Image (tube, rainbow, N blue to C red; front, side, top):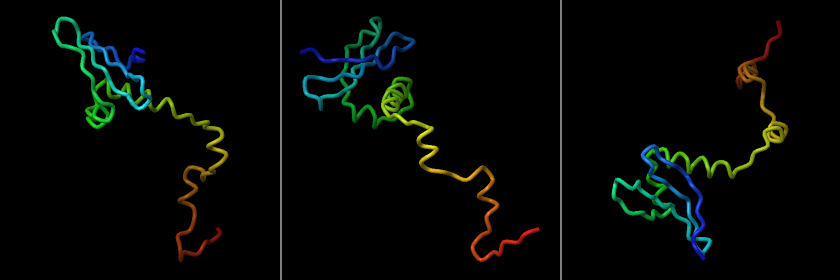
Length: 103
């Protein structure tokens, strides 16, 4: 079975970066296909090594965005399950040892 792959980033110089999975579900890696004129050969980069590089490149940011999109957050549910004070309200509370006074 050929590896499954999803395009991560298509560079302005025609380099392409893919997230790939081999036959084993644990075999996940990044495949870099350089542009034709560069004469380079495709290279396999282990996922941990690619993420550890943290170089801020467009392909790195794109992969982090893909990973982040897998996390689903229902903001309405989150807001109702963990109430927070109104902006500025925390400053209105007396500090420990300080008496609250009414005007």
